[in-house]
Every structure is written in C-alpha cells, then in structure tokens.
Length: 238
Ligand SMILES: C[S@@+](CC[C@H](N)C(=O)[O-])C[C@H]1O[C@@H](n2cnc3c(N)ncnc32)[C@H](O)[C@@H]1O
Image (cartoon, rainbow, N blue to C red; front, side, top):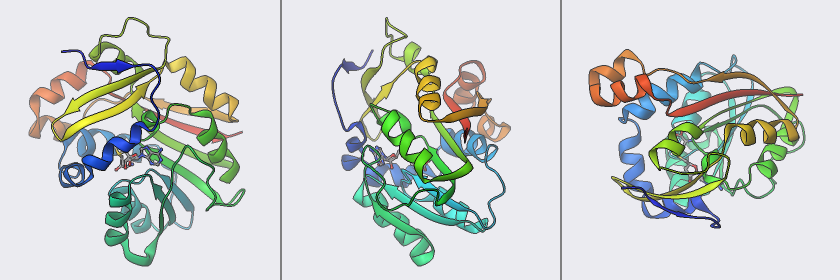
C-alpha cells in the first residue's frame, strides 16, 4: 500500500518522539544500519585522530562513540531529548551533546571551528536543506568535509509510487516501530543545494550491501543488491 503523502508539513523529525526508545533498541542490530549504512558512511570519513567533528542528528550516539574512539573530539546535537540523554549516557563527558534543531542556526558552534560534519540518515527529515548546509559551511574550517547519508531519491520515488520525480514530497510511512515522516527530493536538488551552500561533491556512493548483510537477512540483501536504498555523499567546503 502506498503511504499517505502531504505537501506542506514541517518538523518531520519530530516523529521520533513516539518511537525513540524502540528505534534505539533495534538500531545496533538492524542490517540496514550495521551492514549497509555504517560501512558506507565510514568508507567516506577522513583520518579522525585529533580532528573536531560535528555529529548533526546523533540519534542514540553510535557515531559519537565511534568518532571518540578514533581520537576525534565531538560536538553532537539531536532534535530528540531521549536520543540526547542516550548519547550522554553512552559517552559521558567525552563529548558535548545538546538538544537542538538542525533547521535553526547552530549557536553552539563558532565559525570555522570544525574539521568534519557527519550527518548519517538525517537530512531527509529536513524540508529545506539550504539553511543547515549553510550552517555546516559556516562552522567548517576551510577545506573541511561534510559526510552524509540519506534516503536515495530513486528508492523513495519507486517505493512510494510518486508520479513526480522532480518534486519535494512529504512522506508518512509505517515502520515496525511506528509512524515515520520524512521528505524526498530529486538528486538535482541535493546537488544544487550543496553547490549553493558552497560545497563541492567529492564522492557519491550507491553501495552494495555487505556479505554480512546476506548472512543475517538474505531477502534484504537481494533487494539492496539490485536497488539503491541510501545515497552517500562526501562534499568539501569550497
Ligand atoms: C535515522 S536517525 C539517525 C541517527 C544517527 N545519525 C545514526 O545514524 O545513528 C535520524 C535522527 O535525526 C534526528 N533529527 C531529525 N530531524 C532533526 C532536526 N531537525 N534536527 C536535529 N536532529 C534531527 C532524529 O531525532 C534522529 O535521531
């Protein structure tokens, strides 16, 4: 069944208010995260020792812990208060973690204060990408990197049976854990917003699932072997 679609809804990310605990309980065993998203994002990261990383939309904090363990200093935010608490519990005083909305200015970070911004599986909760991308640009040092993963525009277009690839659409979907909301946008819009914010795309990945994915979820592996699911981009501040 195709999900409901609306044209003009904000705060898609607030859907996590109802499902944060359930999401966190599953995330570290979900093959889509463990054997697909994380290998893709990690393959785009630079050397992390001694760099300052901003984790934009940290969720329960897996990336914050990983980045710290590689020797980075980390500042992280999330819209969801439960995820902020979970991340603080996970890493204690080792990182600065605050509740904040990526749709608003990043008041906790100064200009050119950051080497790397990571935003795994976050951007599709934002209706307008330009303001957060401009903030990423502001807080990055010259030549700094932005690495993010997001729903692949082709995946959302085909899975939800849209008739207009070139529009930006609001999606209401039913996951096992509850009702989720996000936006899809065409690849051109992603590229245009990155350019308008002053980024140059360095790498774009449409990875295949890992062998470990096949071992734990053969059907999912088969699907992802033939259909792009997430899109991964590394962009550099120009
Ligand atoms: C799929 S989870 C990914 C979490 C984490 N990046 C990871 O990969 O483990 C999406 C996250 O984006 C956060 N989020 C959604 N909209 C946001 C916004 N406007 N500002 C900050 N965080 C947001 C959600 O609260 C949630 O933690």
